[in-house]
Amino acid sequence: MSYQLICSDIDGTLLNKDRELSKNTIEEVQRVSPIPLVLISSRMPSALRHLQIEFGNENAPLIAYNGGLVLNNNTILHSTFIKNAVLAEIINQCTNTTIHLSLFHADEWYVPSMDYWAKREESNTKVTPTIKANNEVIATWEKEGKGAHKIMCMGDEAEIDKLYKFLEYQFPDEIMLYRSKETYIEISHKNISKKTAIDVVLEHCYPSLSMANVVAFGDNYNDIEMLKAVGLGVAVGNANYDVLKVAKVITDTNINDGVAKAIKEYF
Image (tube, helix red, strand yellow):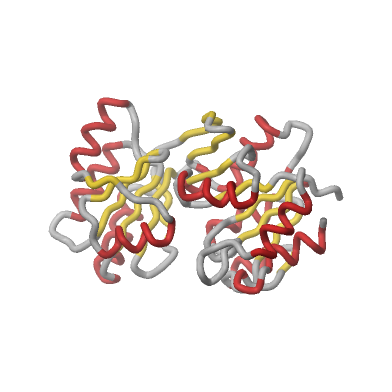
């Protein structure tokens, strides 16, 4: 099979222990150019673009928010966001708790204050949020016909547990809950995934290719559907057990340039 498109998750997969691209990874991606690398992540677009610049592939499509927003040269190919009524209830449930809420739409990131969690995300993503009260964000989005591509809830594990159970029961058909850590919940629209986003990219940008022509890299539960669907689904060695089970190939860990090693082997 001829592999002609690479899609890769970012955190825990493509980046090293310092949350940066290694020299080896950059060189391997550049070596196989013009085969495009599509970055696919739960991150916002502006937290991905600096990586595209390092690779020198700024013109490649970009998949943000786990597939909630798909861009090609800043043209929106697909956008699905959470209803503001759902967001309002999430805000209500977090009132009188210590849970931090980060609200995202496209390149907008809003936090009510620069607390520990906001500073941590700023450090991880190299993007600075805008400080704005949650209810003010909803009011603005209502006027503009927008909603959240992603909601991040961060805080005490017991409070996060309680919120997770409530949301799972209250909105089973509207939102997807992803718990990357015990103190985190990432919330996105129910009908999106990394796999559906790759479908959009293939349809609009590479119509001569199919899923069979795609190599994808991942490490976590939100990568499973993607790895099962593509021609070659590759898990890094540090991936969760369930991810390792569905991968067609297991490469080295992210901190040992697993993605670069697999690109060298299969391209």
